[in-house]
Image 1: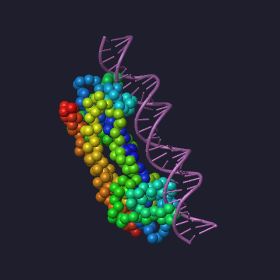
Image 2: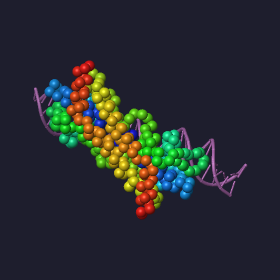
Image 3: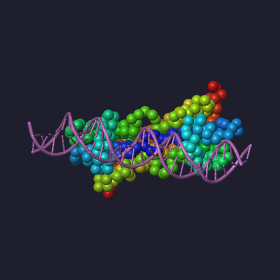
Image 4: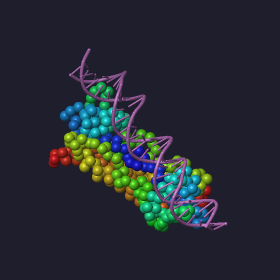
Length: 145
Length: 145
DNA sequence: AAAGTTGTAACATCGTTTGTTTCAACTTTC
DNA sequence: GAAAGTTGAAACAAACGATGTTACAACTTT
């Protein structure tokens, strides 16, 4: 089981928006070309990023823009925006443990805290990286090419 | 996107094997009853745990047993055994970033290290808990009931 | 020999992800 | 204000993966 490609696509999209800002209108069509992701999916992702307050888009007017400085957007913010639409947590539990079995009726209590800790560890690591770093690294590589 | 319920089911299964060891034959049918997971799925999970050297099962002879002390089995070992059958990593990348775009041809380089770090953070947290702790907590709750 | 169990394959079902088509509403530009 | 391009959104399609089901050969125990 894997975390959706929408997450990496979203980071790609945001990087493009910042890198090409001013140079050109960054439309969903352009982003579709750069990411290789269908333009409608791009618009969906942009919609989720907009709801999360990360980008600004307007119907009709082509061109997405960041709603915050890149230093204030972490990978966690992006992850949360596109990946965590429902609040079920990272781990899925088997749904029908048997309450008649002493293990079955307690396994949730025993595991839940540990699963949350693992999920938090992942999320905290994602909080450490900002879009500013991603963009800086990208620009640096481009210059060195 | 979520991590499969096979993981929590596997921990449940291992806990049962330890808790009921000696008292009864812990068959896939019994485990199916306790977990609420189909008996064939249970056997699949047991098969993966066997390949990982975590349990011992034999065709015909009913009853699974642990292949190691509970203190030497971490949640990470279980996660790895049942969840990481292919080696694609936790994050899925969008597949066709455009090499003609400077962002597209470098996004992998820029992100890969960070994604691995996030995955490692998750895995390291899972390494902190052993089956011994899960079993101890479970037994404690059962006694207090 | 009989009964119970595991391992495994083949198939079914369901939900999710991704892509596609379509179109109304909107903005920009001429 | 008309034309062209763009977004937002809905509805549908296709592909994939997770889980369940059925079936059965191989094996162990009694």
